[in-house]
Length: 87
Image 1: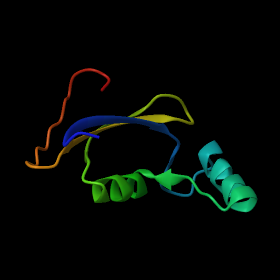
Image 2: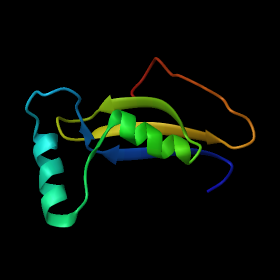
Image 3: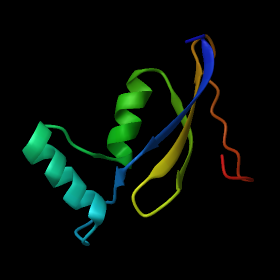
Image 4: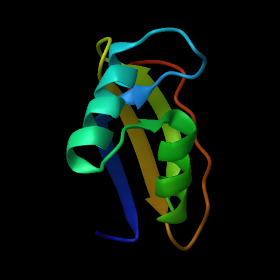
């Protein structure tokens, strides 16, 4: 991947709080059957920021999937936000 790149991630994002959610059930299913897990937005941020990506935007695409846009600038840190448009 080049030093400057945009990464689009489509993945489930576990909502915070104690309200019921299909994604929370899916998280439990993954834990029991494969030892895996779904992540909250904060956990996604932590993992991807460790890989030197900056979160630009997270958009719920459906009740179960979100679209995350991340930019990477290895030699210069740029924090951008695009208020208009989906991504």
